[in-house]
Length: 193
Image 1 (cartoon, rainbow, N blue to C red):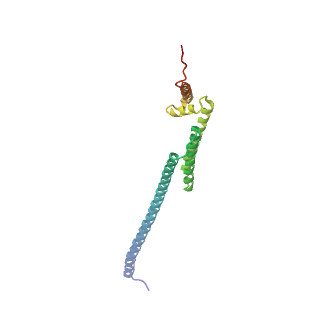
Image 2: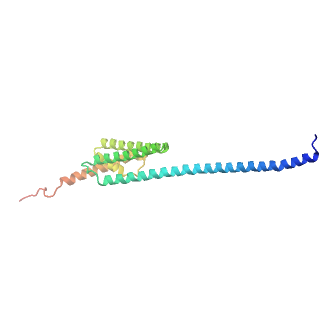
Image 3: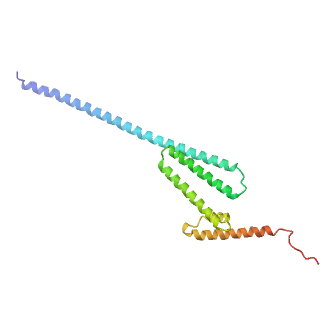
C-alpha cells in the first residue's frame, strides 16, 4: 500500500504543531528550572550574607561587653602600691583582652582577623619591651618612660632625640621633687644675737 500524497501532507501538518508544542514545553521547563536555580542561588547568597552579618554582630557585641567589663573592673579594682605594678597589670589586661578576641575569631575561622590581632599583640609587646629597656637604661627610670610616652608627636626617625629629651625632663622633675621635699618649712637656721 502506498501512502497517498494528501495523507503525507496532513501527517506532517499534524506533527508540526505537536513538535512546536513540545519545543514550547521544553523551553518553558528550561525557563522554570533556570528560574528555580537562580532563586536557589539568590537564597544561598542571601543566607551567607545574613550569617556573616549575624557573626559580625555577635563579635561586636562580645567586644563591647568585654570593654564594659574591663572598664568596670579597672574602676573598682585593686589599689596598687606602685605605679609600675599598675602599668604592668594594665598591659597584661590589654593582652588578655586581645587573646579573647583571637579566640572568638578562631571559633569562626576568621583567619584574617586572627592575623591582624596577632600583629596588634606583637606590636604592643614590642612597645612594652622597649619601654622596659628605656626605664632600665635611664637614671630617672620609669619617669623617663612616662615622659617618652606622653610625647607621641615625634616620629620613629626622631626616636633617639625623643628619648634624650624625655630623660632630661624626667631628671629635672626628679631633681625638683627632691629639692621640694628637702626644703621643709621650719628647718631653716636662724641667727640668734
